[in-house]
Image 1 (cartoon, rainbow, N blue to C red):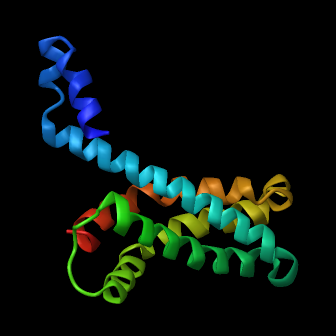
Image 2 (cartoon, rainbow, N blue to C red; image 1 turned 90 degrees about the vertical axis):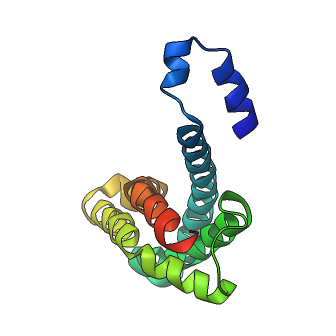
Length: 151
């Protein structure tokens, strides 16, 4: 993806190229990869909520789904987005990932809880709440993952 973007940038006028140094392109590529992993996590999150909501209710299912989705996104980010970055054991890195993303968790599940509590459509269709929650936590999680987990 990075090589493709660099080729496209080379075709752009010089003033535009000046706005896109290699470091910025790499960050953009990494964010796009993180977002792609986030979409996979959203699918896992939403599927888990739908699978567990009858047994655990929307709040219990939301908490369980977050744990499953966070583990999934950590693994995919470790294998793809931040491949070769970070140190220590996988277990330690997973724990740091979960700890570092507590702010993102609060934004994510806070948005989810507000929506399923106050918006009937979100309670009937939890995909609305899981999607809004994912967006709410994404930028914080990306920043903390880069700075603390996969550095």
